[in-house]
Amino acid sequence: GTEFITVGNRRIALPVSPRLQLENRTLHVTAPMGGNLALFAVNGKTLLSRPVTGTASISLESLPAGRYVAKLFSSAGKPLANKFLQIR
Image (cartoon, one colour):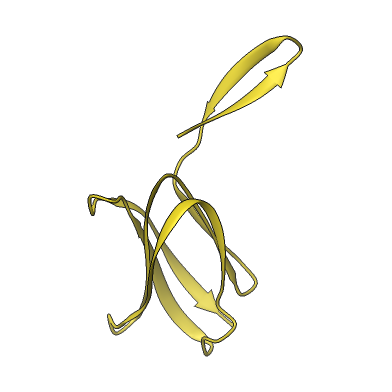
């Protein structure tokens, strides 16, 4: 994906990469071309699976403290981003 900013009278293209970022108990997802988010427990059990387009913020408040893995896939199933999460 691409984001544009304007500096003076010039328009500049900035590439936007897929991204997973944990802030407290909220997972911020950036998927410029869309995709599917999956959240796994360390034992491999799928806890969440949902489509994401653009950006999304997902509350993880209902999860007990522990370690998890978030994975973002393209619509075709190609891995785009992985993140190990430590929930306290």
